[in-house]
Amino acid sequence: MLRTGLVVDARYQDHYTGRNHPERPTRISTLLTLVEDYHRPGMKHLAPRSATPEEIALIHDSTHIGRVAATAEKNYFAFDADTPVSSQSYATALLATGGLLTLLEAIMTREVDNGFALVRPPGHHAERNRAMGFCLFNSAAIGAQYLREKFGLQRIVVMDWDVHHGNGTQHSFYDDPGILYVSTHQYPYYPGTGAAEEVGQGQGEGYTVNLPIPAGWGNEEYQELFQGVIDPICRQFDPQFVLISAGFDAHSRDPLGGMEVTEAGFGTMARILLRIARDHAHGRCAAILEGGYDLKGLQKSVVQVLDEMAGDTLVNALPQLEPRALLPRIKAVQRQYWELPKD
Ligand SMILES: [Zn+2]
Image (tube, rainbow, N blue to C red):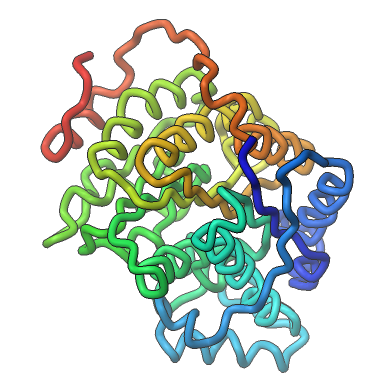
């Protein structure tokens, strides 16, 4: 059994987004309830620290950090129509990023093998100089950069299975061959980026892998994509760490996403990624919560991923798939850079 670090904290409820906002404090309340009842040997609770402004500056410019910091003096401010904040939002965002850094430190020092940071606000839409789409600081991007600066890693996979494209993460590493950014997302959809032809640029060409997919896809289609495209690309990249931007808004119950994935589907995706981590990265794998707005879907999906992180199921066969050829355009783009199995 693998040792799994778990970061969750009541203070993640302190970022208040107003009535009727889907990215709401009860997302954390429901996960706090969940982890009270979720026990297994090898599970270790990690107390999150706050990220420092210097750590946030690994990705964001000082003007943006200053703008978010300044909201601590206001009861209400909105970066855009989707992204309202309250006086505790800045502190909560530092704790969210810090929660991931706490987990990464625990994994890199072998205190645990893998883990999940159950934090909010989410981060993957946050750009170097801009908050947007419920996101203030891009924790996953900061985490990836932190692994390089603090621990000297050179090749990191950031897998983003949130139903929305992680524009901020993509842009953070668009010309960077050290971070393989892979995203599955409903397309066309918010925020509008993430076409298959967005592949990175300069030295980073080929190291941004966008897998835009139509609404209505479920477990089987996602599995085909993970097995047929994501798994071979990640293995050729040979990552030293697998970081998951784990949003659960592709869940069939989610009010924002239009996908039909169930918790079992997220379990399959996690298993495929954990196997890559096992074979290439000494098992080092961390997930950070992004979206996911149906509380029951969120809870069940988190449990499924944690169950996979325990490691006992990694040897189990994946569900059988009917052979199909769903992805000709995506595969044609990726075949310029990576070897993929024949259709
Ligand atoms: Zn999302």
